[in-house]
Length: 298
Image (cartoon, rainbow, N blue to C red; front, side, top):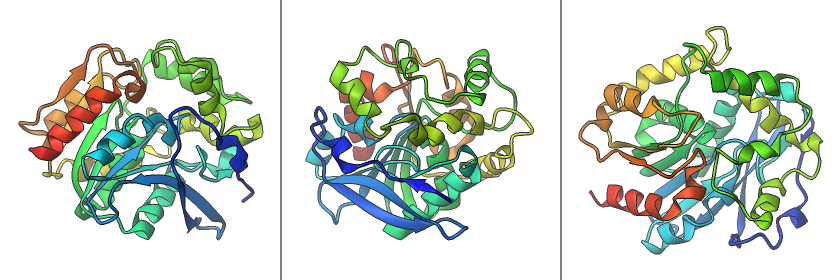
């Protein structure tokens, strides 16, 4: 497997982002070494808050939340999914499968030996993060799912049909899709920070392929994996909270399914942020921090 690595100089002088990089090497089933990046703030011995992002973002998405959460005395980790951010980027679209994403992040989780985790996950960070919860429930103390879901091959919305169809033959990522409708208007410096991991379209294979891995169709290869994970999540009785954006066009409605099916979601202070779009971390970081800390203090 050919793997690309974004030059470090692409990550200099980003707005509100001055975090030291941390790296973990894992190995794909074919033997390829893949380097996965995360940032980490707060006391090393504290129980971790793990922040997982979606497509096409990276740990930069959490730049306004990490310092505030760490100030509360927690250890805060924001990881870049493979193909995103400062993590390595397999070069071919067919290098990316849902099973591989699950395997890569499972190996990262075990290699870092994280325990007593509070997971905050959004978009693909939620799909992959919820799979990790299903496979390693002993490592997770609580979960906050935000603008995400676990597709079970039950059909696609009009939005998803458009998104998957558009990306099937794409040769570069349509960055204009980040806004409007997905987040509030970004500054030019913020837009460039989201582009930083991708010096050219050849680095974008992972983020272009992500939409095709969304297991909304019954014959999607990832659907059986997600159905198996969902059955396990229906036995997860540790605290499970949903915080969704009312303006999210992607995953709206999944929170009600989670609240009804996951035992740990019972009697939690579930919340909808009225002005928040899909990338809720951009639209409402202060509210998210307040709600996360309230959840931790219960």
